[in-house]
Length: 614
Image (tube, rainbow, N blue to C red; front, side, top):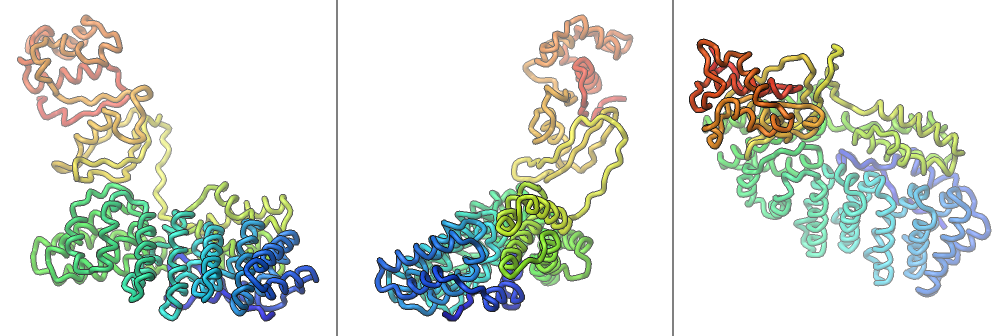
């Protein structure tokens, strides 16, 4: 049997962000030349599959071949896969069913280590979805699901194959099978699929207007499922509308109006931007000034929530020119000012990307991990090995690139992802050593924006957290870092309605995520807050009415003594038993300060304490 190969190099411009196609130099050569000879038993089993006379014998011979290959291991799988693929492509319906049975059984029997070799059959399996024999078509769908489930750690490895199968030259039934595989990827590996959204969204869009209703329906379903893994709850309510806008562009203005009213509070990452950016570009190209203004508002809000500017790099070449043009062409001064505001945010992100990536273009290729370089790291760590090992190494390089692009640093995740593809070729000690070296060197490849390190002054840290704060529909602070040290004084600077008081009140009410609770750090918010229901009390009784004062068992005499120490019962001051409703603004603030002093707080929060004090 002449081996027929299923994986081809990716064409220029296709799936350029996350999917990585196997290179011609290793995977193709490994499966097309210097194949080891099959032993007599495996040769006979392959011949039996090829000569299957009916559905029953096809199933039996396929299972028998899989059991035999599984017993002999990865080298035999490497040698036999081209023959199984050849049968799947060129055999009759019975032998094709047998080949599919063998692939499915091998997926179950040989596990993770077999993925790099079995996935070579994916294209042939998808194409069998348009076979004349209904049994073969059904079996191809089952085998495709089995392969896609196995491939989930390396979704980016198989996406180029799936995208090729969406071409109009492919039979519609096979295209539907390919679209269904994307839905399976969403179910089995949502995080890995989310990383591929920058390519999935444009890849599926043409299929959604296909003339064949089955393709149109499958692509719409796949798009809905793919968008669901964007991982941003702020846009979850408009995902259905996003799909509708792809089919009906005239509804873009309506969706822009809806999105402009969304309160964005969650971190904006690459998957969510992959969903929104095509729509935003379209919104900026609308003739309506209102729509372009609303789009600029969305871009401004979205850009503020980008925690890592590198996430925005693939989309800046699309958004920047469109927003620059809108800024130049919008005639309304107020709308133009909003466009300029959004443009400044994009330019800020663009500068941050260029500072890390270098150059002026900030191209996507500079952001993604270099697969050739990663393959070199793997081969340095574990040796280049023979042609069989080379296939696993290239597949592992794809997985490592996905981990690098996902900025994964945890050693345990790297070990779980890489060890299975080395264990068939190395002993346990060599695997452990190799995994450690691969992890160390690959983590160094992660591109990050380095934050300035703070000098250690030796002061006790009372609070160190990162939080997001909103008031109603307005984002006040997003992913803001707050560090408070004992003995230090901090000032909150900001204009009216910027959230200074809201922040301090939220801290005192334990509403800031990550801020230590009162049981660990006592925080007191000092404000002249004479409550109406307590205004009839004397100064001493007013302080005693505070639950925190009561919890600390502070007596009336202690309160009176503290009041006298700050001016009560002096020649110009009020008496400690005077009613709080008789106090001026300055003395009310002194009363609040006295209460805070009695509480012995670790952190005092003052809301404009000098406003009423001479």
